[in-house]
Image 1 (spheres, protein in one colour):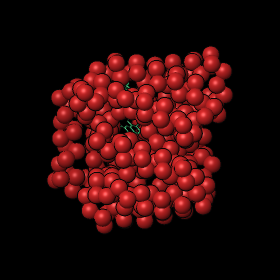
Image 2: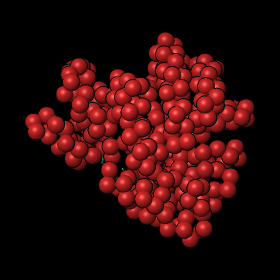
Image 3: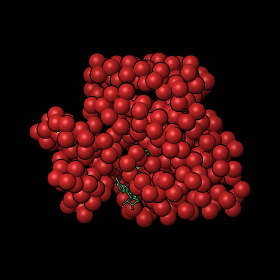
Length: 305
Ligand SMILES: Cc1cc2nc3c(=O)[nH]c(=O)nc-3n(C[C@H](O)[C@H](O)[C@H](O)COP(=O)(O)OP(=O)(O)OC[C@H]3O[C@@H](n4cnc5c(N)ncnc54)[C@H](O)[C@@H]3O)c2cc1C
């Protein structure tokens, strides 16, 4: 499995395959399993369908790690357009973004200005914003910006990664701001002095953090982002035991991943899907294949079926 995962990760950096897949109608069709489409119109159609199906959504415009101001400003403009497009869905939809899309690797002040511009537009139409957690070297700046916006009254939440040794400290710190907090296992390659390396240990830490979040659920809104059925079952049971109302927490999954589980859980709980869109879908799409190489079968069916 590890070999296949590494294979797909290396393909995610392959520019020729990217050019081929993103340049053909077939490639774009296959990508629709995990990506809403390339344009805002595609996105709005998918969000509308999901809402009719009983799902909540958090929408992300694809792109990350910009090293120049121009693409960061273009991303900011696209997010402003997105706030307007999502206005009719504001009760069930929100925005997810990465600060490296807005210039965090260039300049913190510039990033803060960009995020504030999006947050102002989002507030005008009543949309909430979630700021993703990226590599550990970027987290202090990320949380500084998120806390600053909360102090100024903007609706902005963020993410705690359970693999981090300092996850509990981060959670306690952020909980003081009363924001929405998304708990994830953590997606980046981090060294042993920063993050747990053993998957079972990460899973256990996720459960401990989830219980701590449920305890704080009178102050924070809890978002549990995982496709791990056993962990979801554990959280559902704990929340029932602790008498936490179902409108104080929700589950989040990626659009296109574990459809059966999404539908089953939606019958009893709030389920929010992370829906990405944009022309830069290739690396995101290949990472989904790397997470579960069995997904490649549906790609082959699309090619030859
Ligand atoms: C809504 C959302 C937002 C996220 N935001 C962030 C963030 O801001 N920062 C960050 O570091 N990480 C983020 N992540 C990623 C997260 O950290 C994990 O890397 C990712 O969710 C995998 O862990 P898991 O608990 O879902 O599943 P795992 O423990 O990896 O697997 C659990 C089960 O789900 C299945 N599964 C997992 N992925 C797939 C797939 N692609 N296709 C089919 N089945 C699959 C597995 O086969 C397994 O059965 C986010 C994830 C989600 C769902």
